[in-house]
Image 1: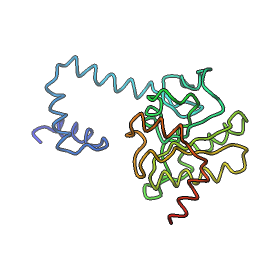
Image 2: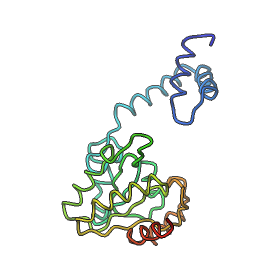
Image 3: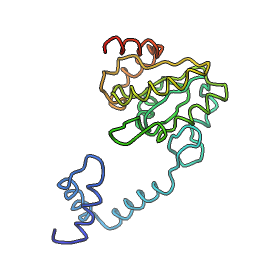
Image 4: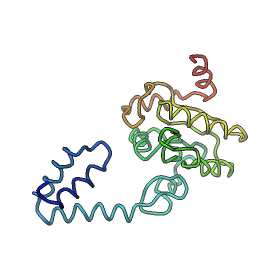
Length: 208
């Protein structure tokens, strides 16, 4: 590199998911060529986001308050909770305008290969919400991957002691797909045609 400052910037940008060093260099040079005021606004926006965005104390959603706008919305149904991997999946379901219940953001899925176990996710927080007695249905809106299925299976076992219906999205979402990439119509149909989790569990075991 002709400059250690450019090299340092490239190192930081290349640390972002899906960004290689070549792309990082292109982005660094693009930023370098932008007006100083524009770059200042860019860096301030990133810094403000890092300092100002909070994880909701109830569901794990992201926002600027201790309790997110969805949890504070009295029009939402307390009886249903959709369990999602992260914010991207929550936004995908919200974009349909169909689901009026609550959410619980796990912050990931169980993945031993990546060193992520049940204790690393917000599973205990979900159980605490169910103990309150308002929840009647837990909807698994997790990725249709091995990690997503493993996570759903673990939570399902933990929920057996509670009087709550456990359902999962219909397989309109293709096996192996990330929920955030499904189109809105597919998500709506998957929500409408959700099935008891035990039924899907049985079909998975039959295939094995």
